[in-house]
Length: 174
Image 1 (spheres, rainbow, N blue to C red):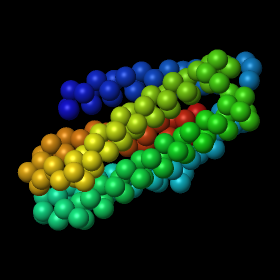
Image 2 (cartoon, helix red, strand yellow; image 1 turned 135 degrees about the horizontal axis):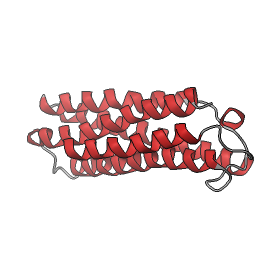
Image 3 (cartoon, one colour; image 1 turned 90 degrees about the vertical axis):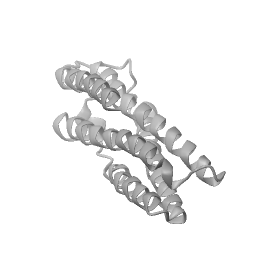
């Protein structure tokens, strides 16, 4: 997992640098300041999911399976809420603000960076849902906590990347 996170961090670094390099260089179409609104609520949801996954794993180690399941499902709901917020933002940008990946350099780099992150959140959610299915089919045991710690590392990484993306896209880049 450390190798995967290292490789993914390098990829995200390239996308962040590209976004910062090209932001403000578009000569046509909407600019970030014209169309972007910081998704604060959905960001809070994603950040909260780091706390809930951590708490869930602590409950699993303590063999409190019901509380583990409650917190694990809450983590999924918080991650799904974040993805919903991203989708809602994209619908607004595409259909109301007419910003697509081919509109200008801002559109290309914005959708590439935020889309890359959304893809990682989606993959993480699929893994979290798989674990939930194991729980609900009575195939998850406290002994699996070390494996789930590895998944938790990935989820924390995705959350940490969002802090960078949020800062670059919604605070610095506007």
